Image (tube, rainbow, N blue to C red):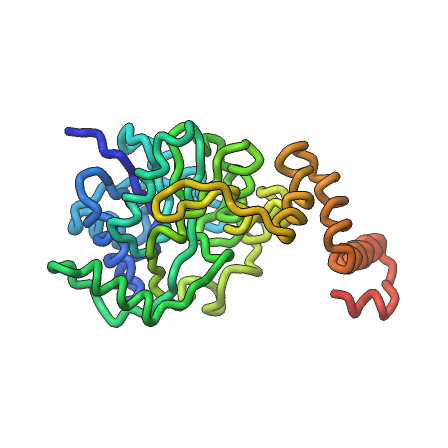
Length: 323
């Protein structure tokens, strides 16, 4: 069997509990599979219905994923299992609600060979899908038209997919999947290692199928969950949560170029210099305070209140109002 160029892997939610989630995850798997023999699709997890759906759709499945104490699959374990699937040059971690077309593979090929180590990422268009995708002739054009007409661009906060050479990200922290923070850390990690960090948003059209959060407590996004807080701690704190705007390269018309220098970008590069070049979180805190003095002062007051409470002291009313 020929080794594929890319392994696309994902950790889906359970199948069989929410018909809408089932539908969008099937759409995502089949869209990835449609990219052809240069791609192998791997689903990871032993939640209900995953093994059966993988078999039905003809994709590889690994079930023995390690988990957090709360039972959430670990991103590190998902990465480890994906590496076992084959010897592909590229690995691509995506969310199981993403929709890709042939331009995605073309963009990744355009980057391949330009550097030994890199991270490919990008934004997406959020859209409500009315039903299963019809993969008959012309499906890509129809999907692209829907995305461009109805999709909402999530911009610099919409990073849902990460493509990288096999030699990268071999030491993932034990982040909880489906919780915030680990995806932002991916961009920080690439920049701090000096890898080319490439935003391909201008060269592809990527979709994200809207869904609810019925799989999470209170049917709410995961931003305030304890596992999200732990992800942020493992990432090195919120200073290490980077956005797409922190990528230093971009793919424009399938050509790799350095991102243009602007005043805003210069200030941001000054702010993150201690983090990505000196690997000092302490100095990173100082540079953040220099660039964002008001925000830094607010964070300092919140920190003081927490310390006073731990000491059993009651903070002043003005301090209480900062929380």
